[in-house]
Image 1 (tube, helix red, strand yellow):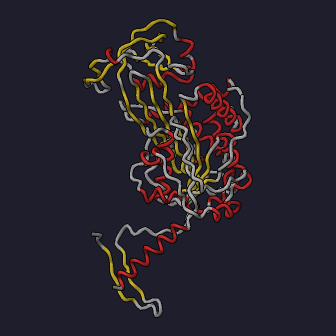
Image 2: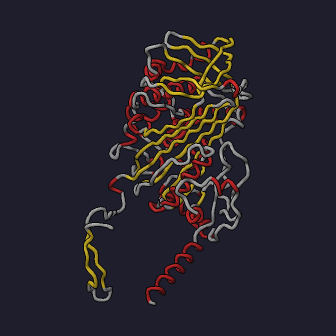
Image 3: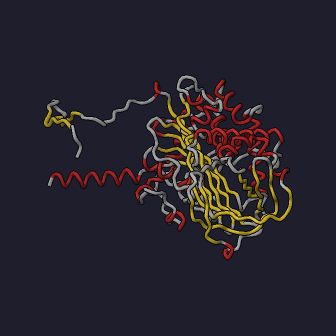
Length: 483
């Protein structure tokens, strides 16, 4: 009977704790999806830009103690990340959105400069070259330079000293971080104005409440990421519920094409910076399904595959000493699909190595406008990269060093470094058009000297049950095996 009472008491206590948690603050509409808002009526009051630290939000936190009662939308119900549960969804109430009511204030209508365009293409070429050098030969390859540049630039806004210098050189060559931010802001404004239905994007920062990051992160760093990138900022304990919430944010913003970005949150993870992109466009001249037939495809290893091959036409032809190819237009958006077939005896990795930034920049000017009969497989694949080694090889070394990293622009001290940068992508090409998505996560970690004490019982251990009054051990044991 005593054991039963104790169990009931524990359940009652858990329920009381849950009822005292802050109200739910959900995300913006899913990228590329409908614009039906899922915002709870119990969201904390709008926070001004000058109140983005933990001390300034205490009153807001205390005011938002009632659990959300709004009925979830169908998208919230169906797009829960893998491994999440109803209990985890309820625990979204513990996540405080600090940027409610805040919007970017960067001037609209800025033009994308030639210097920024060149820096962007240099970064794209360097990423493709470095990743294919490190990638397993014959493996599918897919990156989004825009997603990587955005997430790393958000992070660079908190860098200082040589760490910032290296990040600027990798991201923008001769451009400083302010010019890179301005260039990205101008390009995103261009996308918003010219391709609102085809291109969706979102950014967010997640602060570890357990490490008091809401108190430690500089207000001007947060404000700059809101102003330049319209970033959403959240504060929460970094546990399994927050992991599920981060993954659900990415899934929503990529229209479920990338269901998860992280598989765990490390105990020393202080901040996660995220970018998500989603692209969905129809062909101007679609492939007819009646022209899709089974055909043979020879893969990189020389193996023959039977695939669905689409047949149709394109309006631009490409040719150089290294490849032949075509460009096929999308409908009502300023994008085109380019396909390059390497010359016989040349691998795709070798072609990517030789293209260089000028090779990408000259594709449009090299294309001749003429009708081209094309055959292209229907295909769908995803890719994932750990970019730490890639970015270090490109010259961004200090940012990953526990000794040399200087992100004092984030916290006012040198307590943080980049633990890892994860980049995931997905693409689907069919008769009707193309869908593609990308997400990049920058995981900021606390340097070892500042990590809280930690005990992990991952090998044999002794345990006991002590009488708290006299300190007498009532049980003593040792666990050598776990059943």
